[in-house]
Length: 261
Image 1 (cartoon, rainbow, N blue to C red):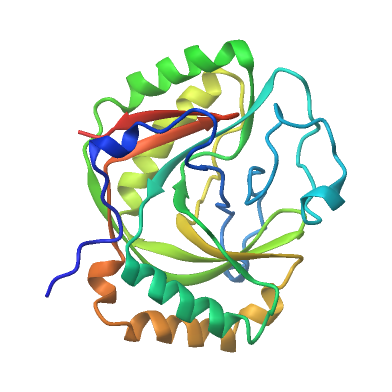
Image 2 (cartoon, one colour):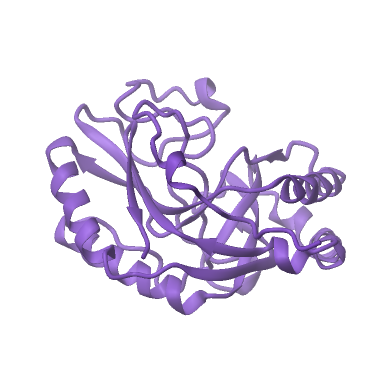
């Protein structure tokens, strides 16, 4: 029996409450540590990070040893543009296999609780810029059609200051459409004098993360074993074919939706 792809939204799921009923801030990192390129910064807004509007504390002991990339400032909103993924049971079975294998190399790995693919870094927007920012995004994203990606290459990522490591599934097909989306999002960021996305991005869906630079333990043998698990998983080809049907923007505790045609 054919299983549906990794992603699928119904319109009823787009009515989510504004105070974080569906959490949108996860990790999308820089190019893989193994690619020989310099490691680039990873957005803030990772699992469990408080939003700038919600706290004025920079005490890293309060959030799992994670360090804020930018200082808190009243009226500044952490903002992130991404493609949300809703996964199915079979995907969670695959995730469980991968995380339990990877934990034999790094015991502190935690599975992500939700999944997405970033189209922007995490940037800081002043409150009064949110509406014009969202209007501009809506205009630029309006012509885009739904499209498919394949995310099936296991990669290890670290953030810029090596305080976190991630295991992700890198996109092996659909890269061109993602670059086109990013170029539109970049133009909006430029209008607001905000940093654009990485120049040579490794598009991926993060699966698991841990504190510290554990890339040395996860690359090589561990990575080969994880890729073998993905390649051998029943219906992996169908399961890891992702249809994107909306772009989402999370700013502070608010969510904005941009359906693809």
